[in-house]
Image (cartoon, rainbow, N blue to C red; front, side):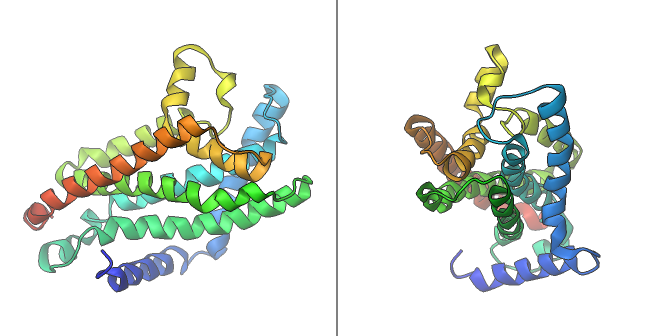
Length: 252
């Protein structure tokens, strides 16, 4: 992959240009989407059904949405990365992992933009940036490992079975509500609470909130478990992708 880094960046530049070239607001859409969702859910959960989050709910929701949008946007783009570049996949010999992974890099750029907005919201609500914020790269690496692994699997699966693209929107919506994007773990008990606790995205989202909003360290046990799950997902996905890659040209 290091040898293919220039190719990766060329796809990243192309995807960024395609995404924002004809957009009136350009990169501002990376901020507006979670911002509008934050407003909607702030009305629901801070006025109609109050939740105890320990920080102002709009800030709590925006942090969750920013983290979630990184994974959701990367997977949505990676889903069609191979099928949408069938000519390249079938005619040109190169590391095909570059295509889905470029989607992850583009989503990371969007995430960096939303972090600026998150910083402004923290300033507005009077929440200072604490030393724990230095752990942001570590949490991001764990999230990128999980997201990259799933992106590789989805891209390959969609090339083999076109039903995957129809199931994706349903699956990503269910996964969002099965994560702590809008509500904390203590808000649900029973089987739903267990599902949230076992979901690696729940720890990732809460880790961002801990280090940025609360100024605390994430719990060690879930941190280790999520890191191992994310790295395992990436390694297994790479092995599956590379084993299937020689046949991509036949079915693209």
